[in-house]
Length: 153
Image (tube, rainbow, N blue to C red; front, side, top):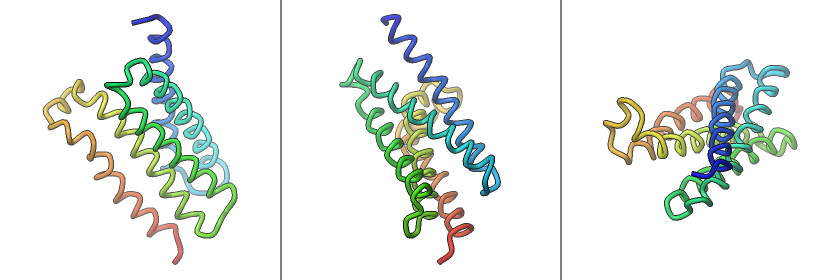
């Protein structure tokens, strides 16, 4: 593996850790000025970086990695939607924000588990299709809970 690709993978892993940690921190923070939006911006930056580096990595072996680039693009698009909904406060913005940011986190974790799940202790015992659906099985009910809790109808 070329040295440049190895360095890119290290950066990708670090950005992925940043996005995973700051995304969880934003979700768990009180929803008011301060911690939640600041952590959310760090999540958005980490996710953007991981999507960009992931796309470059996928281009190195497109035949085998194109699906990860697709998940990265979906995660980035969902996060952009969630961010734009909050910034512009369009009608129903809070629901769009929750769905966009939560959906981006699910897509990011799906890409991680699809790529790494078969090599993780205990996870390797699961059927491969599990890695495609488990993040959504866990995440979608949490998004539904957040919508019920925070969005007025």
